[in-house]
Picture 1 (cartoon, rainbow, N blue to C red):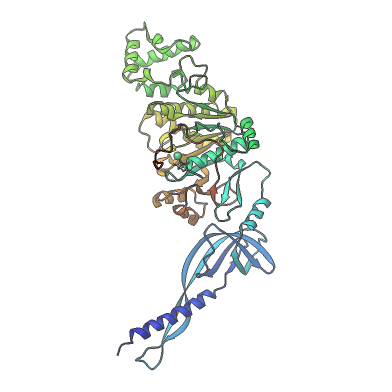
Picture 2: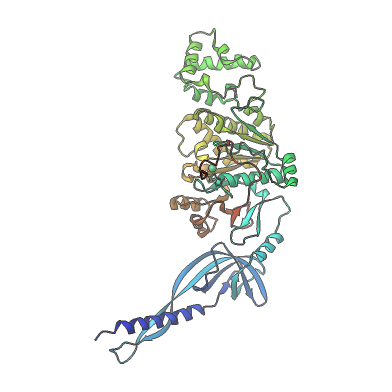
Length: 505
Ligand SMILES: Nc1ncnc2c1ncn2[C@@H]1O[C@H](COP(=O)(O)OP(=O)(O)O)[C@@H](O)[C@H]1O
Ligand SMILES: [Mg+2]
Protein backbone atom coordinates (compact mmCIF):
# COMPACT_ATOMS: atom_id res chain seq x y z
CA UNK A 1 0.00 0.00 0.00
CA UNK A 2 1.42 3.41 -0.95
CA UNK A 3 1.87 6.30 1.55
CA UNK A 4 -0.95 8.78 1.40
CA UNK A 5 0.01 12.07 -0.32
CA UNK A 6 -1.02 13.98 2.82
CA UNK A 7 1.29 12.15 5.15
CA UNK A 8 4.10 12.43 2.55
CA UNK A 9 3.77 16.20 2.38
CA UNK A 10 3.51 16.50 6.17
CA UNK A 11 6.69 14.47 6.47
CA UNK A 12 8.37 16.59 3.83
CA UNK A 13 7.41 19.69 5.76
CA UNK A 14 8.79 18.24 9.01
CA UNK A 15 12.02 17.28 7.24
CA UNK A 16 12.44 20.75 5.79
CA UNK A 17 11.67 22.40 9.12
CA UNK A 18 14.26 20.25 10.88
CA UNK A 19 16.79 20.99 8.16
CA UNK A 20 16.07 24.70 8.40
CA UNK A 21 16.65 24.61 12.15
CA UNK A 22 19.94 22.76 11.83
CA UNK A 23 21.12 24.90 8.93
CA UNK A 24 20.12 28.03 10.80
CA UNK A 25 22.23 26.93 13.75
CA UNK A 26 25.44 26.83 11.68
CA UNK A 27 27.75 29.24 13.42
CA UNK A 28 29.50 31.83 11.28
CA UNK A 29 33.09 30.81 11.93
CA UNK A 30 36.40 31.58 10.25
CA UNK A 31 39.76 29.91 10.41
CA UNK A 32 43.12 30.98 9.12
CA UNK A 33 46.17 28.77 9.08
CA UNK A 34 48.55 31.45 7.84
CA UNK A 35 46.99 34.49 9.50
CA UNK A 36 46.50 36.15 6.13
CA UNK A 37 43.96 34.04 4.27
CA UNK A 38 40.87 32.67 5.93
CA UNK A 39 38.08 30.29 5.15
CA UNK A 40 34.69 30.52 6.76
CA UNK A 41 31.29 28.94 6.88
CA UNK A 42 28.03 30.69 7.50
CA UNK A 43 24.40 29.74 7.56
CA UNK A 44 22.69 29.62 4.18
CA UNK A 45 19.74 31.34 5.88
CA UNK A 46 21.68 34.47 6.71
CA UNK A 47 23.11 35.81 3.50
CA UNK A 48 24.31 39.20 4.69
CA UNK A 49 27.78 38.49 3.30
CA UNK A 50 28.73 39.29 -0.27
CA UNK A 51 31.71 38.62 -2.49
CA UNK A 52 34.00 41.62 -2.28
CA UNK A 53 32.32 42.72 0.97
CA UNK A 54 33.91 43.33 4.33
CA UNK A 55 33.74 41.23 7.48
CA UNK A 56 34.80 41.55 11.08
CA UNK A 57 36.33 38.44 12.64
CA UNK A 58 36.35 38.23 16.45
CA UNK A 59 38.72 35.77 18.02
CA UNK A 60 39.93 35.67 21.64
CA UNK A 61 39.49 39.38 22.10
CA UNK A 62 41.19 40.29 18.80
CA UNK A 63 39.17 41.96 16.06
CA UNK A 64 40.29 41.60 12.47
CA UNK A 65 38.91 43.26 9.36
CA UNK A 66 38.70 41.00 6.34
CA UNK A 67 37.41 40.95 2.80
CA UNK A 68 35.45 38.04 1.36
CA UNK A 69 36.77 37.03 -2.02
CA UNK A 70 34.67 33.97 -2.68
CA UNK A 71 31.37 32.52 -1.51
CA UNK A 72 29.56 29.39 -2.55
CA UNK A 73 26.86 27.02 -1.42
CA UNK A 74 28.00 23.56 -0.39
CA UNK A 75 26.12 20.40 0.55
CA UNK A 76 27.40 18.62 3.63
CA UNK A 77 26.18 15.46 5.30
CA UNK A 78 24.00 16.17 8.34
CA UNK A 79 22.56 13.89 11.01
CA UNK A 80 20.78 10.64 10.26
CA UNK A 81 17.03 11.11 10.36
CA UNK A 82 14.25 8.60 10.22
CA UNK A 83 11.34 8.99 7.85
CA UNK A 84 8.22 7.18 8.93
CA UNK A 85 6.68 5.08 6.24
CA UNK A 86 3.08 3.93 6.70
CA UNK A 87 3.68 0.43 5.43
CA UNK A 88 6.95 -0.23 7.28
CA UNK A 89 7.51 -1.20 10.90
CA UNK A 90 10.68 0.88 11.35
CA UNK A 91 11.42 4.40 10.10
CA UNK A 92 13.52 4.71 6.96
CA UNK A 93 16.93 6.14 7.89
CA UNK A 94 18.49 8.77 5.68
CA UNK A 95 21.37 11.28 5.95
CA UNK A 96 20.15 14.83 5.91
CA UNK A 97 21.85 16.95 3.24
CA UNK A 98 22.64 20.33 4.79
CA UNK A 99 23.35 23.43 2.78
CA UNK A 100 26.01 25.75 4.16
CA UNK A 101 27.75 28.71 2.66
CA UNK A 102 31.50 28.46 2.49
CA UNK A 103 33.67 31.43 1.84
CA UNK A 104 37.25 32.52 1.69
CA UNK A 105 38.97 35.83 1.93
CA UNK A 106 41.92 37.81 3.22
CA UNK A 107 42.62 39.62 6.45
CA UNK A 108 43.01 43.31 5.64
CA UNK A 109 43.77 44.63 9.07
CA UNK A 110 44.51 43.38 12.56
CA UNK A 111 46.57 40.60 14.06
CA UNK A 112 48.15 38.60 11.24
CA UNK A 113 48.67 35.39 13.21
CA UNK A 114 46.69 32.19 12.60
CA UNK A 115 43.35 31.73 14.30
CA UNK A 116 40.70 29.06 14.52
CA UNK A 117 36.93 29.47 14.82
CA UNK A 118 36.77 33.24 14.94
CA UNK A 119 33.23 34.58 14.77
CA UNK A 120 32.47 36.32 11.46
CA UNK A 121 29.99 39.07 10.81
CA UNK A 122 29.48 41.67 8.17
CA UNK A 123 31.49 44.88 8.77
CA UNK A 124 29.64 48.16 8.85
CA UNK A 125 30.69 51.03 6.55
CA UNK A 126 32.07 52.99 9.53
CA UNK A 127 34.51 50.18 10.36
CA UNK A 128 35.71 49.99 6.76
CA UNK A 129 35.96 53.75 6.53
CA UNK A 130 38.07 53.86 9.71
CA UNK A 131 40.47 51.30 8.22
CA UNK A 132 40.77 53.23 4.95
CA UNK A 133 41.55 56.39 6.91
CA UNK A 134 44.17 54.47 8.85
CA UNK A 135 46.06 53.28 5.75
CA UNK A 136 46.04 56.54 3.78
CA UNK A 137 49.32 56.91 1.90
CA UNK A 138 51.56 59.95 2.21
CA UNK A 139 51.18 60.51 -1.54
CA UNK A 140 48.36 62.31 -3.31
CA UNK A 141 45.01 60.55 -3.28
CA UNK A 142 42.18 60.69 -5.76
CA UNK A 143 38.70 60.47 -4.34
CA UNK A 144 36.80 58.81 -7.15
CA UNK A 145 33.72 57.42 -5.44
CA UNK A 146 32.52 55.22 -2.62
CA UNK A 147 32.74 51.55 -1.78
CA UNK A 148 29.77 49.70 -3.21
CA UNK A 149 29.63 47.30 -0.25
CA UNK A 150 30.30 49.94 2.42
CA UNK A 151 28.16 52.83 1.20
CA UNK A 152 29.31 56.19 2.43
CA UNK A 153 32.93 55.06 2.78
CA UNK A 154 34.83 57.18 0.26
CA UNK A 155 37.29 55.32 -1.93
CA UNK A 156 40.52 57.04 -2.82
CA UNK A 157 43.02 55.90 -5.41
CA UNK A 158 46.72 56.07 -4.71
CA UNK A 159 47.77 58.61 -7.36
CA UNK A 160 51.29 57.17 -7.38
CA UNK A 161 49.82 53.94 -8.79
CA UNK A 162 49.40 55.64 -12.14
CA UNK A 163 53.09 54.97 -12.71
CA UNK A 164 51.86 51.59 -13.98
CA UNK A 165 49.78 51.12 -17.08
CA UNK A 166 46.04 50.99 -16.47
CA UNK A 167 43.33 49.08 -18.30
CA UNK A 168 39.78 50.41 -18.18
CA UNK A 169 37.28 47.97 -19.55
CA UNK A 170 33.51 47.57 -19.64
CA UNK A 171 30.73 47.13 -22.14
CA UNK A 172 29.36 50.06 -24.05
CA UNK A 173 27.21 52.19 -21.75
CA UNK A 174 28.78 50.87 -18.53
CA UNK A 175 30.16 54.32 -17.71
CA UNK A 176 33.78 54.06 -18.89
CA UNK A 177 34.08 57.51 -20.38
CA UNK A 178 32.30 59.18 -17.47
CA UNK A 179 34.47 57.37 -14.91
CA UNK A 180 37.62 58.04 -16.91
CA UNK A 181 36.61 61.70 -16.67
CA UNK A 182 36.33 61.40 -12.87
CA UNK A 183 39.85 59.93 -12.66
CA UNK A 184 41.33 62.54 -15.00
CA UNK A 185 39.70 65.40 -13.07
CA UNK A 186 41.20 64.10 -9.84
CA UNK A 187 44.63 63.67 -11.41
CA UNK A 188 44.41 67.24 -12.70
CA UNK A 189 43.34 68.54 -9.29
CA UNK A 190 45.63 66.56 -7.05
CA UNK A 191 48.82 65.86 -9.01
CA UNK A 192 51.12 67.54 -11.52
CA UNK A 193 51.15 64.56 -13.90
CA UNK A 194 51.04 65.64 -17.55
CA UNK A 195 48.13 64.10 -19.45
CA UNK A 196 47.65 63.53 -23.17
CA UNK A 197 44.23 62.21 -24.20
CA UNK A 198 43.47 60.59 -27.55
CA UNK A 199 39.74 61.25 -27.69
CA UNK A 200 38.04 59.53 -30.66
CA UNK A 201 34.48 60.54 -29.71
CA UNK A 202 35.04 64.14 -28.59
CA UNK A 203 34.07 63.00 -25.08
CA UNK A 204 36.60 65.23 -23.36
CA UNK A 205 36.19 68.36 -25.42
CA UNK A 206 34.87 70.15 -22.32
CA UNK A 207 37.21 68.64 -19.74
CA UNK A 208 38.45 72.15 -19.01
CA UNK A 209 35.00 73.47 -18.04
CA UNK A 210 33.71 72.92 -14.53
CA UNK A 211 29.99 72.36 -14.10
CA UNK A 212 27.71 74.94 -12.60
CA UNK A 213 27.15 74.21 -8.93
CA UNK A 214 30.63 72.78 -8.33
CA UNK A 215 32.11 73.81 -5.00
CA UNK A 216 33.84 77.18 -5.46
CA UNK A 217 37.09 76.14 -3.84
CA UNK A 218 37.27 73.09 -6.13
CA UNK A 219 36.47 75.27 -9.12
CA UNK A 220 39.31 77.64 -8.25
CA UNK A 221 41.76 74.81 -7.70
CA UNK A 222 40.76 73.24 -10.97
CA UNK A 223 41.15 76.55 -12.79
CA UNK A 224 44.67 77.00 -11.45
CA UNK A 225 45.89 73.36 -11.69
CA UNK A 226 44.23 71.70 -14.64
CA UNK A 227 45.55 73.63 -17.66
CA UNK A 228 43.40 71.73 -20.14
CA UNK A 229 44.00 72.50 -23.81
CA UNK A 230 41.58 70.95 -26.31
CA UNK A 231 42.79 70.74 -29.88
CA UNK A 232 39.90 70.54 -32.34
CA UNK A 233 39.71 70.62 -36.12
CA UNK A 234 37.14 73.41 -36.03
CA UNK A 235 39.17 75.74 -33.80
CA UNK A 236 39.98 78.96 -35.62
CA UNK A 237 42.78 79.97 -33.30
CA UNK A 238 45.94 78.53 -31.87
CA UNK A 239 44.24 75.33 -30.68
CA UNK A 240 43.34 74.06 -34.12
CA UNK A 241 44.07 70.34 -34.40
CA UNK A 242 46.63 70.52 -37.15
CA UNK A 243 49.54 68.50 -38.45
CA UNK A 244 52.31 69.07 -40.99
CA UNK A 245 53.18 66.31 -43.41
CA UNK A 246 56.77 66.71 -42.26
CA UNK A 247 55.69 65.97 -38.68
CA UNK A 248 55.08 62.38 -39.71
CA UNK A 249 57.61 59.57 -39.52
CA UNK A 250 58.99 58.76 -43.00
CA UNK A 251 57.31 55.35 -42.77
CA UNK A 252 53.96 57.00 -42.13
CA UNK A 253 54.50 59.47 -44.94
CA UNK A 254 55.14 56.60 -47.33
CA UNK A 255 52.22 54.57 -45.93
CA UNK A 256 49.75 57.44 -46.23
CA UNK A 257 50.78 57.90 -49.87
CA UNK A 258 50.85 54.13 -50.39
CA UNK A 259 54.41 54.54 -51.65
CA UNK A 260 56.90 51.75 -51.56
CA UNK A 261 60.47 53.09 -51.32
CA UNK A 262 61.70 50.45 -53.78
CA UNK A 263 58.81 49.79 -56.16
CA UNK A 264 57.96 53.52 -56.39
CA UNK A 265 61.54 54.77 -56.10
CA UNK A 266 61.11 57.75 -58.46
CA UNK A 267 58.18 59.24 -56.59
CA UNK A 268 59.66 58.30 -53.25
CA UNK A 269 62.91 60.15 -53.93
CA UNK A 270 60.89 63.14 -55.15
CA UNK A 271 59.03 63.05 -51.85
CA UNK A 272 62.30 63.04 -49.90
CA UNK A 273 63.66 65.94 -51.99
CA UNK A 274 60.42 67.84 -51.54
CA UNK A 275 60.54 67.48 -47.78
CA UNK A 276 64.16 68.64 -47.79
CA UNK A 277 63.18 71.77 -49.77
CA UNK A 278 60.37 72.29 -47.33
CA UNK A 279 62.65 71.98 -44.31
CA UNK A 280 65.22 74.29 -45.89
CA UNK A 281 62.51 76.92 -46.34
CA UNK A 282 61.85 76.78 -42.62
CA UNK A 283 58.61 74.93 -43.18
CA UNK A 284 56.89 77.89 -44.78
CA UNK A 285 56.09 76.67 -48.33
CA UNK A 286 52.60 75.20 -48.78
CA UNK A 287 52.27 71.75 -50.35
CA UNK A 288 50.94 72.74 -53.82
CA UNK A 289 53.80 75.19 -54.27
CA UNK A 290 56.33 72.57 -53.35
CA UNK A 291 55.02 70.32 -56.11
CA UNK A 292 54.55 72.99 -58.72
CA UNK A 293 57.24 73.30 -61.35
CA UNK A 294 58.74 69.91 -60.59
CA UNK A 295 59.47 67.22 -63.16
CA UNK A 296 57.48 64.10 -64.05
CA UNK A 297 57.99 62.52 -60.67
CA UNK A 298 56.74 65.62 -58.90
CA UNK A 299 53.65 65.60 -61.10
CA UNK A 300 53.08 61.92 -60.40
CA UNK A 301 53.42 62.59 -56.69
CA UNK A 302 50.94 65.46 -56.99
CA UNK A 303 48.48 63.20 -58.80
CA UNK A 304 48.88 60.57 -56.12
CA UNK A 305 48.13 63.12 -53.40
CA UNK A 306 45.04 64.31 -55.24
CA UNK A 307 43.75 60.87 -56.13
CA UNK A 308 44.09 59.67 -52.56
CA UNK A 309 42.38 62.84 -51.36
CA UNK A 310 45.29 63.55 -49.06
CA UNK A 311 45.73 67.12 -50.33
CA UNK A 312 42.19 67.80 -49.08
CA UNK A 313 42.71 66.54 -45.55
CA UNK A 314 41.40 69.10 -43.15
CA UNK A 315 44.12 68.37 -40.61
CA UNK A 316 46.99 69.87 -42.63
CA UNK A 317 48.54 72.86 -41.06
CA UNK A 318 47.81 76.12 -42.84
CA UNK A 319 49.40 79.11 -41.18
CA UNK A 320 48.89 77.59 -37.75
CA UNK A 321 51.36 78.73 -35.13
CA UNK A 322 52.07 75.15 -34.10
CA UNK A 323 50.90 71.64 -34.88
CA UNK A 324 49.66 69.05 -32.40
CA UNK A 325 53.09 67.46 -32.68
CA UNK A 326 54.75 70.74 -31.58
CA UNK A 327 52.39 70.78 -28.61
CA UNK A 328 53.30 67.24 -27.57
CA UNK A 329 57.03 67.57 -28.30
CA UNK A 330 57.26 70.97 -26.63
CA UNK A 331 55.27 69.74 -23.62
CA UNK A 332 53.22 72.91 -23.95
CA UNK A 333 50.02 71.76 -22.29
CA UNK A 334 49.59 70.26 -18.82
CA UNK A 335 46.62 68.37 -20.22
CA UNK A 336 46.21 68.04 -23.94
CA UNK A 337 42.96 66.66 -25.31
CA UNK A 338 43.41 65.59 -28.92
CA UNK A 339 39.85 65.70 -30.21
CA UNK A 340 40.12 63.04 -32.89
CA UNK A 341 36.33 63.03 -33.16
CA UNK A 342 36.49 66.49 -34.70
CA UNK A 343 38.36 65.14 -37.74
CA UNK A 344 36.23 64.10 -40.71
CA UNK A 345 38.01 60.96 -41.95
CA UNK A 346 39.25 57.75 -40.39
CA UNK A 347 42.65 58.18 -42.06
CA UNK A 348 43.10 61.58 -40.45
CA UNK A 349 42.18 60.20 -37.03
CA UNK A 350 44.63 57.31 -37.45
CA UNK A 351 47.38 59.61 -38.72
CA UNK A 352 47.02 62.05 -35.83
CA UNK A 353 46.91 59.21 -33.27
CA UNK A 354 50.07 57.78 -34.76
CA UNK A 355 51.79 61.18 -34.85
CA UNK A 356 51.01 61.78 -31.16
CA UNK A 357 52.17 58.31 -30.05
CA UNK A 358 55.30 58.53 -32.21
CA UNK A 359 56.14 61.97 -30.80
CA UNK A 360 55.72 60.79 -27.22
CA UNK A 361 57.99 57.87 -27.94
CA UNK A 362 60.56 59.93 -29.86
CA UNK A 363 60.78 62.40 -26.97
CA UNK A 364 60.92 59.76 -24.27
CA UNK A 365 64.38 61.02 -23.30
CA UNK A 366 62.64 64.08 -21.74
CA UNK A 367 61.56 61.73 -18.97
CA UNK A 368 58.58 63.90 -18.17
CA UNK A 369 55.95 61.79 -16.37
CA UNK A 370 53.01 61.66 -18.76
CA UNK A 371 49.76 59.75 -18.68
CA UNK A 372 48.83 58.73 -22.21
CA UNK A 373 45.08 58.11 -22.34
CA UNK A 374 43.71 56.08 -25.22
CA UNK A 375 39.90 55.90 -25.21
CA UNK A 376 38.31 53.43 -27.64
CA UNK A 377 41.69 51.73 -27.82
CA UNK A 378 40.35 48.93 -30.06
CA UNK A 379 40.41 51.55 -32.83
CA UNK A 380 43.76 53.17 -32.01
CA UNK A 381 45.88 50.09 -31.27
CA UNK A 382 43.81 47.09 -32.41
CA UNK A 383 44.94 43.48 -32.33
CA UNK A 384 44.48 43.29 -36.10
CA UNK A 385 45.17 46.67 -37.70
CA UNK A 386 43.49 46.93 -41.07
CA UNK A 387 45.56 49.81 -42.45
CA UNK A 388 49.30 50.48 -42.44
CA UNK A 389 49.11 53.71 -40.43
CA UNK A 390 47.13 52.08 -37.62
CA UNK A 391 49.67 49.25 -37.71
CA UNK A 392 52.48 51.75 -37.07
CA UNK A 393 50.42 53.46 -34.32
CA UNK A 394 49.93 50.05 -32.70
CA UNK A 395 53.68 49.44 -32.83
CA UNK A 396 54.28 52.71 -31.01
CA UNK A 397 51.62 51.88 -28.41
CA UNK A 398 53.34 48.52 -27.92
CA UNK A 399 56.72 50.17 -27.44
CA UNK A 400 55.27 52.57 -24.87
CA UNK A 401 53.52 49.67 -23.12
CA UNK A 402 56.69 47.57 -23.01
CA UNK A 403 59.31 50.20 -22.24
CA UNK A 404 57.56 53.49 -21.59
CA UNK A 405 57.48 53.23 -17.82
CA UNK A 406 61.19 53.76 -17.40
CA UNK A 407 60.82 57.02 -19.34
CA UNK A 408 57.75 58.14 -17.41
CA UNK A 409 55.25 57.25 -20.14
CA UNK A 410 52.22 55.60 -18.51
CA UNK A 411 49.26 54.30 -20.48
CA UNK A 412 45.58 54.37 -19.60
CA UNK A 413 43.83 52.26 -22.19
CA UNK A 414 40.03 52.06 -22.37
CA UNK A 415 37.83 49.77 -24.43
CA UNK A 416 34.59 47.78 -24.59
CA UNK A 417 36.28 45.13 -26.74
CA UNK A 418 39.22 43.75 -24.75
CA UNK A 419 39.93 41.02 -27.27
CA UNK A 420 40.18 43.57 -30.06
CA UNK A 421 43.00 45.55 -28.43
CA UNK A 422 46.60 44.60 -29.09
CA UNK A 423 47.42 41.92 -26.55
CA UNK A 424 50.97 43.11 -25.97
CA UNK A 425 49.60 46.48 -24.89
CA UNK A 426 47.07 44.93 -22.49
CA UNK A 427 49.46 42.38 -21.05
CA UNK A 428 51.64 45.23 -19.77
CA UNK A 429 48.81 46.77 -17.73
CA UNK A 430 49.06 46.35 -13.95
CA UNK A 431 46.02 48.37 -12.89
CA UNK A 432 42.49 47.25 -13.71
CA UNK A 433 39.31 49.29 -13.71
CA UNK A 434 36.59 46.85 -14.71
CA UNK A 435 33.04 48.05 -15.27
CA UNK A 436 29.89 46.15 -16.22
CA UNK A 437 30.55 43.42 -18.71
CA UNK A 438 28.02 40.82 -19.80
CA UNK A 439 30.22 38.81 -22.10
CA UNK A 440 31.64 35.84 -20.22
CA UNK A 441 34.24 35.33 -22.95
CA UNK A 442 35.50 38.90 -22.49
CA UNK A 443 35.49 38.50 -18.71
CA UNK A 444 37.43 35.26 -18.93
CA UNK A 445 39.98 37.05 -21.10
CA UNK A 446 40.28 39.93 -18.62
CA UNK A 447 40.56 37.42 -15.76
CA UNK A 448 43.46 35.75 -17.56
CA UNK A 449 45.25 39.05 -18.18
CA UNK A 450 44.80 40.07 -14.54
CA UNK A 451 45.35 36.75 -12.85
CA UNK A 452 46.27 38.48 -9.57
CA UNK A 453 42.70 39.74 -9.21
CA UNK A 454 40.44 37.20 -7.44
CA UNK A 455 38.30 35.71 -10.20
CA UNK A 456 34.95 35.84 -8.30
CA UNK A 457 35.39 39.63 -8.21
CA UNK A 458 35.99 39.69 -11.96
CA UNK A 459 32.89 37.53 -12.49
CA UNK A 460 30.85 39.97 -10.40
CA UNK A 461 31.16 42.46 -13.28
CA UNK A 462 28.09 40.90 -14.92
CA UNK A 463 26.04 42.33 -12.04
CA UNK A 464 27.48 45.86 -11.98
CA UNK A 465 25.17 48.82 -12.49
CA UNK A 466 26.02 52.07 -14.25
CA UNK A 467 29.18 53.63 -12.81
CA UNK A 468 30.09 50.59 -10.70
CA UNK A 469 33.54 49.09 -11.01
CA UNK A 470 36.15 46.73 -9.68
CA UNK A 471 39.46 48.50 -9.05
CA UNK A 472 42.65 46.56 -8.58
CA UNK A 473 46.38 47.01 -8.89
CA UNK A 474 48.77 49.60 -7.53
CA UNK A 475 46.16 52.36 -7.69
CA UNK A 476 43.90 50.49 -5.23
CA UNK A 477 44.71 49.60 -1.61
CA UNK A 478 42.85 46.33 -2.17
CA UNK A 479 40.68 44.94 -4.98
CA UNK A 480 37.63 47.09 -4.33
CA UNK A 481 34.11 47.22 -5.68
CA UNK A 482 33.21 50.86 -5.99
CA UNK A 483 30.63 53.25 -7.36
CA UNK A 484 32.14 56.23 -9.18
CA UNK A 485 31.16 59.67 -7.93
CA UNK A 486 29.98 62.70 -9.84
CA UNK A 487 31.93 64.57 -12.50
CA UNK A 488 32.97 68.12 -11.81
CA UNK A 489 33.53 69.00 -15.47
CA UNK A 490 31.19 68.88 -18.42
CA UNK A 491 30.74 65.65 -20.33
CA UNK A 492 30.89 65.38 -24.09
CA UNK A 493 31.77 67.90 -26.71
CA UNK A 494 28.53 68.44 -28.53
CA UNK A 495 25.46 70.04 -27.09
CA UNK A 496 22.94 67.59 -28.46
CA UNK A 497 19.69 68.58 -26.76
CA UNK A 498 18.52 65.87 -24.36
CA UNK A 499 14.88 66.96 -24.14
CA UNK A 500 13.63 65.43 -27.42
CA UNK A 501 11.76 62.72 -25.53
CA UNK A 502 10.16 65.12 -23.08
CA UNK A 503 6.38 64.64 -22.77
CA UNK A 504 4.58 67.13 -24.95
CA UNK A 505 2.08 69.50 -23.35
N1 LIG B 1 28.63 57.57 -12.35
C1 LIG B 1 27.70 58.08 -13.18
N2 LIG B 1 26.77 58.91 -12.73
C2 LIG B 1 25.83 59.42 -13.54
N3 LIG B 1 25.76 59.17 -14.86
C3 LIG B 1 26.66 58.35 -15.39
C4 LIG B 1 27.69 57.77 -14.59
N4 LIG B 1 28.46 57.01 -15.37
C5 LIG B 1 27.94 57.12 -16.61
N5 LIG B 1 26.87 57.92 -16.64
C6 LIG B 1 26.04 58.24 -17.82
O1 LIG B 1 25.75 57.03 -18.50
C7 LIG B 1 25.90 57.16 -19.91
C8 LIG B 1 26.91 56.15 -20.43
O2 LIG B 1 28.17 56.43 -19.85
P1 LIG B 1 29.51 56.43 -20.70
O3 LIG B 1 30.59 56.86 -19.77
O4 LIG B 1 29.37 57.19 -21.95
O5 LIG B 1 29.65 54.86 -21.02
P2 LIG B 1 30.72 54.10 -21.94
O6 LIG B 1 31.88 55.01 -22.19
O7 LIG B 1 31.10 52.90 -21.13
O8 LIG B 1 29.99 53.71 -23.19
C9 LIG B 1 26.30 58.60 -20.14
O9 LIG B 1 25.15 59.32 -20.51
C10 LIG B 1 26.82 59.07 -18.82
O10 LIG B 1 26.53 60.44 -18.62
MG1 LIG C 1 32.79 55.69 -24.00
